[in-house]
Image 1 (cartoon, helix red, strand yellow):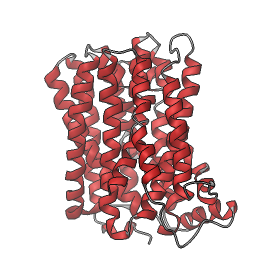
Image 2 (cartoon, rainbow, N blue to C red):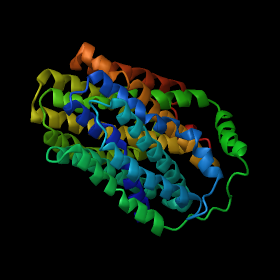
Image 3 (tube, rainbow, N blue to C red):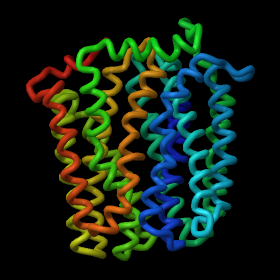
Length: 400
């Protein structure tokens, strides 16, 4: 369980180094909002990781075993690329920043693939729930260190040194990989690349309603994702300092998210996955509208605290239901590749839909931008009518 927690920390740390921290750096350097928004495209590896997930399933490196060998390699390259990102020049060479950030996200996505497979293969079925919870908490702790810690440090240190510190923070992950045991898998690796690629896909798309479920995964959190992409420039634009953002938005918001996840998990025991998706999706949309209210109010620490509390609380509940839903439709025989496919689809809005957010915010204003993000959440909710209506039993979504 402790290994699962530490691996979650290593997976969560790199994510916001190419989003929140990089956005703050570029905003401080005077980079145009449109360029900052387009930088979301460097997150494409999180969306496309299912492409090379079968390769990691099929082949084993000559050291540390099938899972730990790939994990060690990904973590070593992550440390190197994170450190290099700190020595780029956002104002004069933004394309070099984008290239190095892309390398960071590629090896971060590769680490995610292997850790997801490791967790599924290492833990017995009875411990998967607790193990996944500890993984998520570790993931969020890594995100907290990168975002809140990175932004607070950036008020006192140059960004180059901040990224060096973040690179060094990956060392516990490498130590965990070296000391952990390799999972014992009786099924063995796929016999060919063809089997590793096509069998998980054929099994999934043979299910009824498979396309509708994929569409739902794409659109359920799109409004929330688009809004969160531009929140850091938004906070800075209306007068909040990086320390205030780190303390209120990241640190205070972190605990609200943890609380939301716990509340969401308890609520799902009573109302089921389907109804939770409805309730939490509605709360997510309302919380996005809260940013429009904050845009009208302007600089106000109390208003920021209220908006962040509600947004992170509802976001934590929505993510808990989202993760539970995806786990429920994953066939244990193809966990690694199928989960990589589903989580990649989940990341598409974060990358593709987030790319024009800077352009939209610049041209229609912050208040109208967040109202638009609230309205965009509606289609994802309506898709639930197709395969998860309010009166349907939660078990009907399971394909095992």
